[in-house]
Image 1: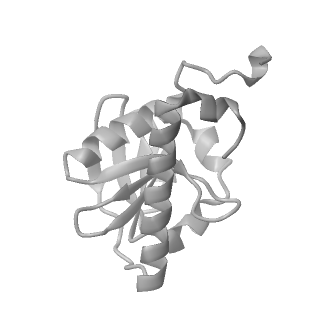
Image 2: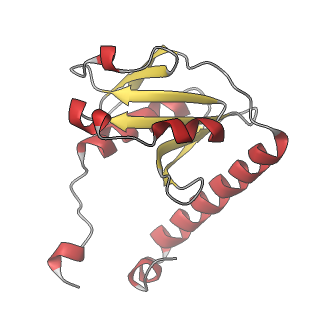
Length: 155
């Protein structure tokens, strides 16, 4: 495989924020997956599933440019009960909409500074998202246990 197609073992800044977010959410009894696609054209950084079936989406932004170049984030709102941004402590948080949740994160943990407003998913949409979450998590686990699957191409 050419070097430019090899996966990088060095996490990108957004991936480090996602790791801290996932660790923090686990302390609140939420399980998480990263890079889930709710529908074609959208890929969320972190989707979290709570103990009562809550669905949260967290978008990790590592810089002002990363945030201002993201034009799709409002499309994520219809796929979750709560929406959050996760940024590091140096991020200019005044750029973020006040009517969304906010987490300050690093590679090791996060803190929820502001809860996003709750907009409960309809039952059918919730069922679809929980199924996508489960399939995504199961496929990731299978690929981790059988690296040959990932080498075979996209699943």
